[in-house]
Image 1 (cartoon, rainbow, N blue to C red):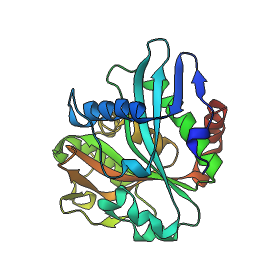
Image 2: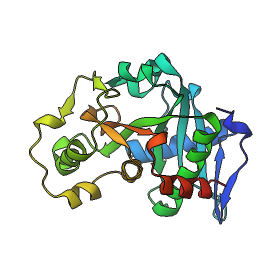
Image 3: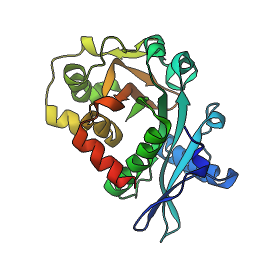
Length: 248
């Protein structure tokens, strides 16, 4: 993948997506992450993986405000065991994946951001990086709010019944505190399940994405998450055209 710091800006109307260009940009993004993931009005969400990642900001140029952001990191083959996601999931099966993989992490939108517009711009930027680097798999942890897994039962049952990972790539259990989807009751209200999913996960699934057969309770971050994978070659042709059109 090319160094994203050399990637031209992507501008759509008043919105702009760009790589972080220095410590000041990263500080702004870390503060937004703290707000979104930890509910903290001050401080940041720094971790040991930040130094190895490329960081992306999504801004409102008219308001000079930060609306969202995320981080990216590329892996090849067995190197995936050094990813953020590999802390929580056994990813040994994905070591055999035949193309470069890109981890998307800490995706967050400011609570006041126009979600649909910012989400579309974010995916346009991600599409650029996927195409530029010949990436075959986009992956990461999709976070549900809080550590009370029971509140997400409809969503988890729907993921189990319709969006399970292919057996050859399926992540294994590694974390100590997990929710095994096989033990859940039959799906209740599918509409409520979809509504209860994070917007990022809904987009993954609309493109043919899949998830692990269990969720991990992350008490440090205060979330419950599922491993999510998207094989680029399986994205429906119509959706791929729309993404690449938006990325121009």
